[in-house]
Image: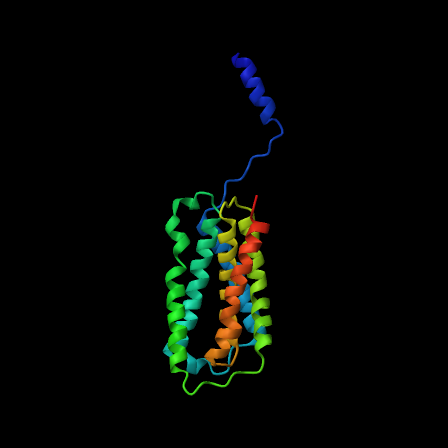
Length: 212
């Protein structure tokens, strides 16, 4: 009986390739962030930094806005890779890390709205901003989706939505460092509302690309 069992095991194992263990969430996140930051640096080298950036480095609300965008990149990236594990890598709290930066970011936009008096003139290139954000976000989004697809997520809707939130946060941060405008109405309409739209699109993409 023992010999037949061992023979059966040997026959089943014959020709099977060993499966590499899944990467840790932190390793996945660092891999994605490193590639995305490299792409962001290339885009900023090509398009250049805004001419008045040194002055804005002394503006508290601008620093808060861009700093919280950077926090959204980090926290939503961590959340997305955590969601790619069926058991959330036993770190359910990591899924909710974008909540606080997002609330603080919305509060900062509200303060900027209150302080925008008289309102700064809106630039005429609104659609161009949307196209730039899409271009700045597409490779980070594709890279993160590819990494998540290699996992075994059972939370593919949420993983896809937060993945695109992370990618578009990079796109918005890149454009905020490059574009010479401070119209809060323009920023909300052409920079930050598209983040919501892309995140909703990510829910659909998560179902299409991450379901297994």
